[in-house]
Amino acid sequence: MTQKDYILNQYYQGKHELLQAIDGLTDEQLRAMPLDHWPIAWVVQHLCLAIDYFIIRGNTGEMMQGYDARFTHQPPEKPTPLDVFPRIEEMKKGWSELMDRAIEIIGNLNDEEMDAPSKHENRMVGALPMAEIILLMEYHLNVHLRNIWTIIGLQGIETKWAEQGKFKYI
Image 1 (cartoon, rainbow, N blue to C red):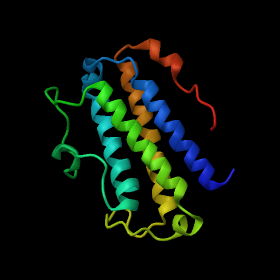
Image 2: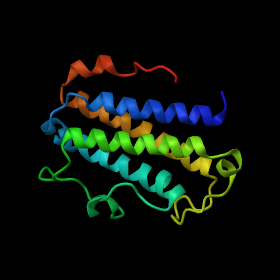
Image 3: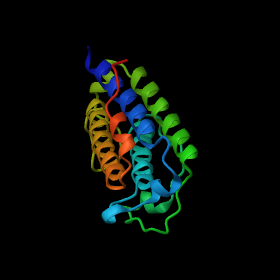
Image 4: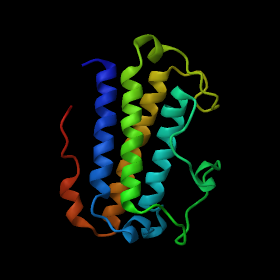
């Protein structure tokens, strides 16, 4: 398996694990803040912004989706129980479209483009090679997937726990 195959597999798995984790949750469960934890809906929007900004915009110059200022402000504003988020079906659709586009972009990068310094203007990533930025976003996704499963557990939605990790390589 090449590095690119590994990366593509990780993005494919991340796309499907997030969809599996939130599938069947109610809008109230997505907005819940157990133990003052950030809500699942906020985490999903944060991940969408990160993939859109660092992978899609970093390669195409444009973002796919628009974002509320509370997500683009740095540092991001802490969510409140009164925050409004997209409904679950809209959230799942947006996530799927973003990840499909990110996977397409990564799949189309040649070795030279993967190894070349990024032209991204963000000071956090500066001139890192694109492959490194892609891997950083994959690690970022995995951290937040663990957050989502933890928030599900904190809400006592135990039926979801058996579903975690049932994935195979593409």
